[in-house]
Every structure is written in structure tokens, then in C-alpha cells.
Length: 295
Image (cartoon, rainbow, N blue to C red; front, side, top):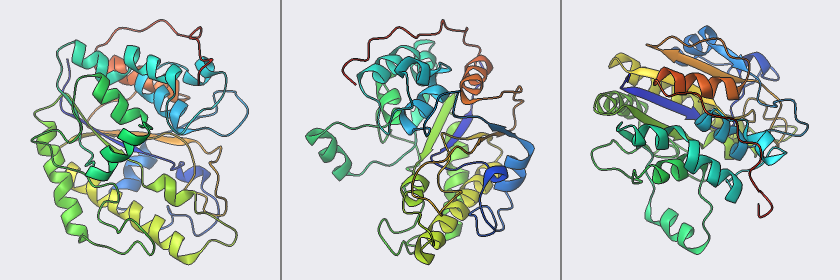
């Protein structure tokens, strides 16, 4: 089984080919990120279903290689309900890898308020849910903790609280940690709530924060690549690439990698299947008859 893959999973960042306007978050120097994205593919997230793509079904497609939109009958999110949770327990990549004896970990840092909020009302995203289903704890020991904001303050005006070179060093540390894992994931979700602050005209503070966050993703990636990591970079749906609206978008999303060969894919389901195949996992039968009456 191939090993040492670092998966940087963006949330709500559409492909630059589908970005809107001259002031897009992609319209700035991103010396590590743009070459990787431009050399990769732009994938459909709509899967032929009306409505705006959502995080729950979009991330489930990536994680399972199954058409989660078809399973649900609609785009659904942001958090997986009972139907998607069952799909993730059965088919999520971390679960399947752990069952095969692989080493998997989610690098995100979850502070105490997160666990307190989950205790009051469980609303866990697809990535933490899948790793817990795989038997891998949140805040795993020995893995560099990745903060949600990558060193920006969590609230407006989203000022830097960590220098950019520290984010690059974090990327290097992730690359080192990936060497002791088969799959190490960073769920980079802060771009999505920033995207939901879009408006016409776009507020300057929101635009500055979204651009700054992508610069920090670039620094994280640069550090990981400098340290020799095999990196996969994806996104679940469009949003922050168009800050003139507050909703998700129909934009295609990136499917890019360094250090491994990716087959051609047209949508996020095919890409999820390709990722499982890269790990040597067998194809799975499509699941379209799951009862989702409680979602």
C-alpha cells in the first residue's frame, strides 16, 4: 500500500478558472499553490443535480468515492446527518484504510470549546466524523496541530496572530509527520465561513481576510513541498472564489497533487474513487438505497 500522503482539503474554494472578478482571492501571488492547481484538474461538483453543492455531500463524495448526492437525492450539508454518517462509517477512506491496517490521522487542532459544543449538540463535519469512525482520535498525539485559521484571528478583523513563516514551518512538520502515516489530512475549512460573508459590494475586511487565508494555505503547502511531502489538494465546492455572493457557487473545484500521478476525473465522485484506487483499495458497489428519512 502506498504511504505518506498529506491531503490538504480546502472547504468552499472554487477553481481559479471559475473565479469571478479581477479581485478574486486567486488574483495574488501564490507561488506554491497556483502552479500546483494550474497543473491539476478542475472538477464538477453538481453531479447533474439542481441546487448549490454543499459540504456534507461534497466531502462525502471525496471521502467515499460514492455519489453522496444521489444517495441523499439532493445536495446536503453542511454536516452529515444519519444517512451520510452511515455511508461514511461504511465507506470513508480513513475507515477502509484503518481496516486494512494503515495509519491514518487528522491533523486539525480542536480546542476544548469544540468538544463542549459537540456535547451539547453533535454537529460534526465529515472529516472528523470519518476519522473517529476509523478509530483515530481528534488531536492525535505526535501530529502537529493545524489551527483552523492558519494563524489569523478567529473573528473580525482577522488579523495575523502567527507569523507566516511559522505556517511554513508547520507545513514542514506535517511533511515529517506524514512519513509515519499512510494518510494525514488537514481539513482547511476556514475559507468557507469567510466565503459566506460575501456581498455586493464585497466588504474590504472580508476580501482581505479571505485573501490572507489563501496566502497561509500557500505557505503551509510550500513548507510541506520543501520537506518532500506527497501532497493532494482538493476542495468540496465553490464559495470564497466569488465574494460578491454569500452562498455557495457552481464553480468547479481543484484536484491537484505533487509526488503522485492522478488519473483524469470529471467530477468529485470519480476523484474520490481514484484516491481509493491509489491506495490499492478495491472498488465498492454504489449505495443509492440507504434510508434517509431521518435526515
